[in-house]
Image (tube, rainbow, N blue to C red; front, side, top):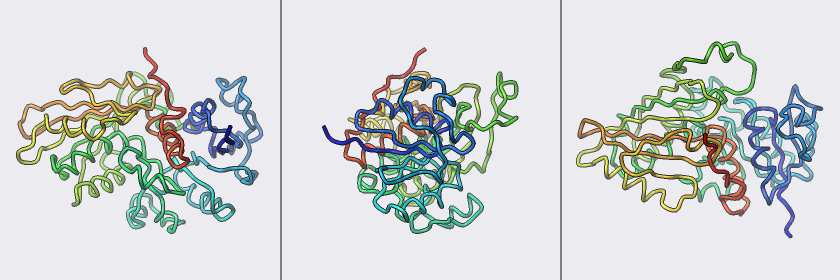
Length: 350
């Protein structure tokens, strides 16, 4: 039997970190060797997340206490803005290390775009230049040989996945894309915040980051790359009172001669054979509950009333395909494992 891949999870006490533990604990080719936290350092993982009781997991330590000697790959589930210097230090200590970063720190290839959207200069420009954008279905070959993979954002994955094939095929206008993307509560992280209290968010829906959400920068980058010209999507995220899931309703303007049926055929061809992407029959509307807890994405295409418009609907679990599941998929790819390894969970329904 071959030796397992030894992994460390930085930021294991957050939602994406704990989701990585859930997925990797049953991965047949992986051994979890280190887990880090800040305030929770010194505790057992089962004390922070009781669902892990009975699992033989390492105790939480600080990043400063992390020993890389036996580590092959690191997952960084750390807050945006903190990961650059952490990863730079990791590679300085062990250049052959592989890293999958779940923050936004390496998703943008243009340093000026990063500074504009995140308010400060990037602290590891040479690493920013080498990072592969980690949306496997659209960037598989670049990821396969990468040392550093930048997991895309959950909102970004939901919209980029269906629209890039349509933009490449010149079927939709890149300057007339309207996205309304609704997300569950876990997308805001685990830190205590007054505006995230149950009584503040239940029984209602509200938009946030309107016209300025940082994930828009990823949409601009990937849409422009696919279209071969600038893209200016209107992106409105909404918070809805559920724990998991993202549901994007995307209105697109068709290029001359294109039809909604062509959009559906193009997506079907683009994702034929992809294990985690299901294109539903034309006119069928996806439901977020049908992907909850899985690494799956469901896509639907519906004809709009106007002959020059169509509606594309995309849904996924923000903690799995939108974060930790996609990170495991990236790990599998760069490690030479079957891409579906450890990701066979079916959706939780009801």
